[in-house]
Image (cartoon, rainbow, N blue to C red; front, side):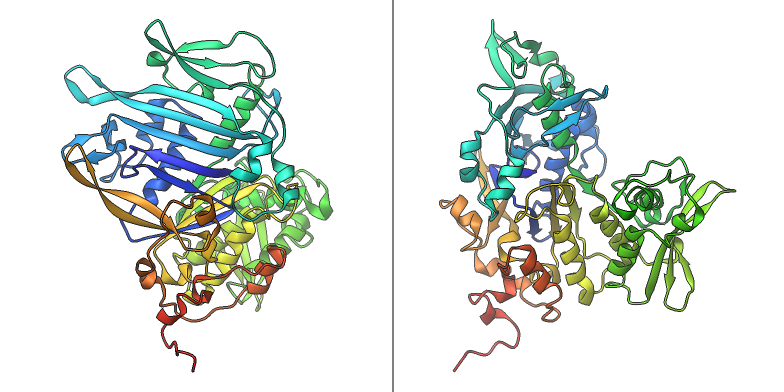
Length: 509
């Protein structure tokens, strides 16, 4: 779980410092930095899994894919910054396995990771340069300091269920030794000699090479970063059938939904593992006895009223799994005939029902393809996907976090006020060069104001564009109140200081 992110020098992000809770909505006009914030998160995730070069090339440039790595760095005028800095505070899983299947347990689960990357030009061809690690550090945050670091509302029982352990010292550190930068990987829980790496020649971060033997906590920090995903649900991928051998896990583009549903239907029937999904009897495959498919149909009916049943058709002859809906008249509707919005909603419901899904989920403009009257339904679902911070984390309450971005008034006006971050551009001057950098602000009288009392909240005028909703929706408010332990979250439209700006507002006599 990402609880705090600091970024500087990456694209138009300069001195950005943002805290996150279980659910966050980043609102702002096009070009203000919403997508760049997601790119920074995804870049860190890729760095935990791949080389510096491959991770950099995977980040989208403004004009599409670019081989010039300078597009990652903050630009002002005709110059680029020569370094970018990242710092994250995160809650990591208590246990996991490494790439060789070896088990690992974290000595402490609340960590801080810092990474500074520099641009290294190659000879007289600066556009063919590479990245160099200038500093890498992984350290612990004391359990006793957790309450002071986690400012979003949550129960003590929840915090104690996710933050555990004890540690003195660093897991990764960077030092100067004989005029050279050395990155050290410290052994976890022992006084053994740390492994040392010459920073200038490292093709990847030290964290990305961690294993369960040397440093299990570092490995689990790597696993946490790897779990940060940006969902880009593509209708073509959502409509495709799956072969019997397809991986039973939803892809970031929405692929493998039939295989995932088939797996869930057979491994979680009646609360216990069932038969092999590929050899089970056809009635179970058809979903007539699988509770997960019944629940999927019930949730989908909130968006599409005519849905009666969801099933996974198993074609033995062609070795294919196909998602199929049945309407109230009994007419089968294959996935290829469903609307884009219905398919995206289906994918999110599948995500919410899969207990294997943990970590951070980023989603751009979730309202795409959804009728304005149904937007509260999808927002309610997204908040259900996120962990319930009123209850202890477990198999029925996985540690999941959701961050969305949007510029839709229908979305912003429905989100709880303390979940909103507003992105805007602010003029900055660097070496006498004027430029514009992204800033992220929050509403007055919310928990982020208490966390950063010196930072100014967003100006009310910046939110006027979001105060023209299509209607006053109330769907899911009672359920949301229950999920927050009886504390009903305020939407933007519920705040008295913004109500005078709503259409049709009348001043009380």
